[in-house]
Length: 213
Image (cartoon, rainbow, N blue to C red; front, side, top):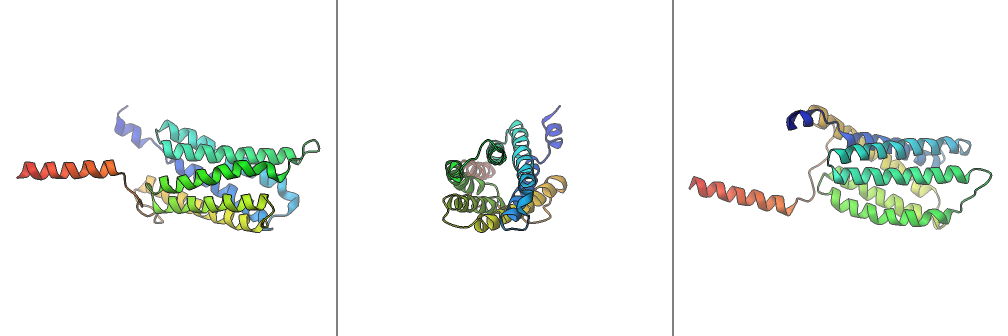
């Protein structure tokens, strides 16, 4: 199979992961702002585990197979976060184990810095993806504050709703662009460009000009 045939058979794995993130984040956000009753908490955690966790991990593994290190790393790491936290909370709701809220502070802190780094890295991809990670970073910050009883659950709830909305927005744009060549909604150009690629393009342009001269 040629390289062109291989590329034509590729799917937009990022869109799959973002759809999963959108479902998980919107469900958790609605529960945190009080739109989903407390009695449905187990269902909320199951949805978060499957869509936010499992779907993102599977999409990340597939993205890595396509040699997409950035997307694969982000999807798998966020997927493992959702999977781990949802599973831990499900176990905590049992009659045997009860975990304190402080247990989740370290993992949320790590993801604050991870997401902040992703803001910079995704700036090389698109405006929408970078903005999404800005909101994700703020979501983790608000979650840490909630775990420390500094703010109410309403703040991370609103942040999760914003994450879910932006993830769905980017998934629609990314999927439509991969299928039709044109995004239904604008994703924006990269905010940053690789210096090596820019330098190579400049050298190539100068070489072409010299050859023409």
